[in-house]
Length: 305
Image 1 (cartoon, rainbow, N blue to C red):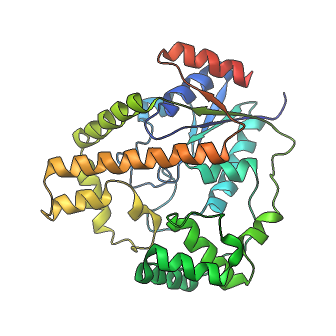
Image 2 (cartoon, one colour; image 1 turned 135 degrees about the horizontal axis):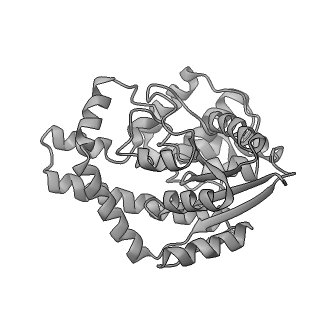
């Protein structure tokens, strides 16, 4: 059997999990998570993790594996994903990597630069500076520090701006000098890539339905439990859509209707960013969609066979 990996991406609520399960059944596969929020143990509802019914049908890996109190990078994910890919292949199973975090997929297709670990002190210093200056001034200061990032990172991409700053500060080398020497660990693999290219109007309806379901499943209690853990504000679990909005509702700053609407708006914006990422970074992926699920499955099977 050739070393085949299937990558399945798409915007939030586009139906990736359903398609992944159907592909896994047809192809004797197992599913590996590539969503940066679904790795957290404490967020099952807000992160829309696959249900227990789904995980009983097909073996799922890297879901709910890490505490919200821990920092978990794309590099950490890649290390874990490599182990799971090897386990799948040893069992003669096809690894199906599914999620919405573009950076995770990039570590598979383009590799991971060997940037030294950035200590928490430096990371914290950069986060505080970003908060103090705001993105426009921070961007200008970063260009002075590292001119190579000009035109390569958009000024509103807060995560990548801060990453570029901390890397230059700590290593004295540009983030893009580190990137220049990277290559994929999977060059001898057959990699099949699918992106669910769902029409905007259908996606917006699916997002709205998903959010309504979350509130029926007591996502408010999930946020209350998260608050009790007193997680460091700089850790990425705080960025999960819904945490801030539900806390505003709990603090009586907004009504329940406003809370749901704000989560809708933020989720739509996130889906738009995911689609923008795909246009820029997933040009050679098969962009597929069909309203009829069995047609979508047929198209997908044709791509991966």
